[in-house]
Length: 205
Image (cartoon, rainbow, N blue to C red; front, side, top):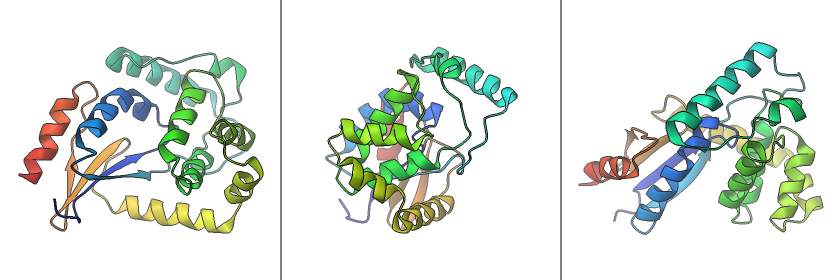
């Protein structure tokens, strides 16, 4: 396989459709990881904000969760909307997975954030929540907190967002296959991993 061939998974840790895609994506990853260089890139759904999420957006997102659950079978804990103060802010979670990447724990951090958010009604927009997730992954909380607040990590985030914006994507999750110096958008199927795998192999062959 040409070393320049790369499957790019563009996601946001707090993207509910990415949560709905999780089971399908795990099958795709398991099938192709030995054949392809697979890299994760954050998309950055929503910039930093301390403002409470407007009521209409809260209702819209709860309806989205219900639609994703019906379409994909993904589980959601709707207690989040009662127990937490939602904010339209996913950049902190994006920083957390990039920080964890340094310790080869990006995928573990993503899984911890998603499970904490969607199943345990915890708020990944809060730095304190993300630090607790780092502790669950046996990362030093002081080191992780310093990293989260560093100018270097902010620069990494902005560079990654700029890179992702140049890819042929229309939202999250997205799959892009870089092959023979070209970027190919791969259609996401939320319920049929084999369909996605076949689309990828069709480009490669």
